[in-house]
Image 1: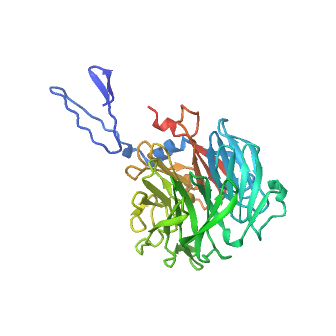
Image 2: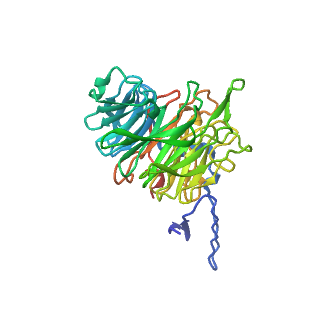
Image 3: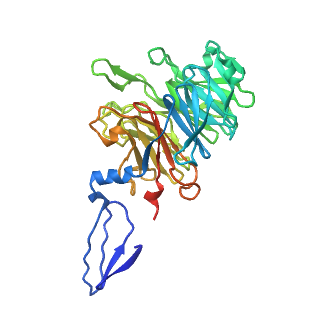
Length: 438
């Protein structure tokens, strides 16, 4: 019980803390007790959506092209843009203001960024078959590490500092992580012109002190994509492949290319364990997992999926799958096409996942895996499709970022930021502080 308040004529209002659908029994000897129960489950879906939409702000800023990812460092947001630039926003301004950009060589297509420190960051360029070293203070590209057959003509953009590497070290680079020892790891999808696997994926290793490529680690399966550094281990998700039906124009899991997770020791640069992810005939569209997002204690990790609105869960202590394709954590129905494009987990253990095809952001509790835990009683509507499910268009929520610190204490305003990319190219935000404050 949180307290009682006199309400006149000998009556009292009693306030109780609880979760959705909790039951309370109140008794008082010699006193007539009349209890009116109001449950969150009694609230209509329209009211729930209105409550959640009140925390969302969209169209905060328009990008000069197509955004591919967003990362936050301190009070700044860095939005990677398909049109060869990184746009920088000051989050202390309301709405966030664009304060500059870092220009990359033409046809780079930056898709991922990892910060070495507060000044330097490495950027993965998927089409450019390269990794750029950028200075976020001077907003300059300082160096380009590029496949020898893909050197761009405009190397002056990176101060004419170019390191060329053999063709075997870059083939559709897609993600990046930096280990505590300073080594940089870049995953490579290794796809052909039709975006089918040419073979297993691989990981390129770079020495951050010399910026020289010092090795290649061959993955156990195809389409090496997401990578996560936890202590001295790297977790690489080999997402496998999907089949596209030209008649139905639908994707499904390719059972010839099942996914796996390779565990790499950052000291020896060897794969020390492989977690196989068996596909399920019962759930034929539950496949193609992306990057592992770990819980704050590093014990568990969650992965989104490319074809359905669901999550997989892995035990990172004993390297076992907890929720695999046969029993995923379901966010939206498995018979409806969706894409949990990105996952971020707050320091309090609250997880958020983007639902690309329905323009929503879902919340889940990593201690119980409950979706929409109180007070997050519905999905956050983050685009056109969420507001009008019958719409033929969707904006495509594809990347999330959490501002470090405590909302209302360390900073004011939004703590979650997101980008959309399908039919809209704008920055959005969510302020969760009013929902959780007393």
